[in-house]
Image 1: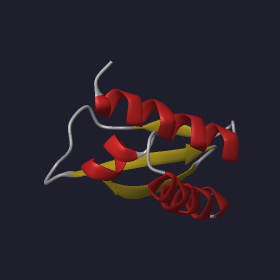
Image 2: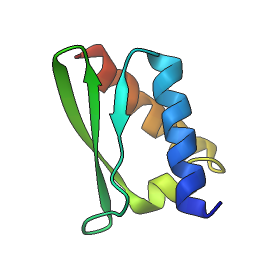
Image 3: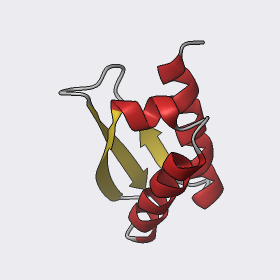
Image 4: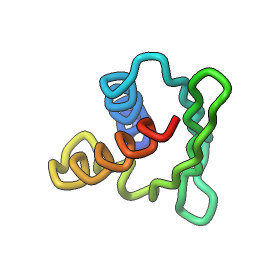
Length: 79
C-alpha cells in the first residue's frame, strides 16, 4: 500500500470514529495537490479540502492527525 492509500485509510478511520453513518468519497487523485472530499449523511453533504501532503502524513504525524481530526469533526457536526 502506498503512502496516499495509507493516508486515505486513516482518514476513513477518523471519519467513522466521529460518526459511523457518514459516507465518504475521496477522489482517486488530487487536483492541484488538494483532495476535495465529500462527506454525506442522509440528505446532507459537506465538502472539505485536504492537501495531498496532509493525507500522506496523516498516519505518521500526530499534529497533522489532530488538525485533520478537528476539520472532520467540525464538518460532521454540520451534517
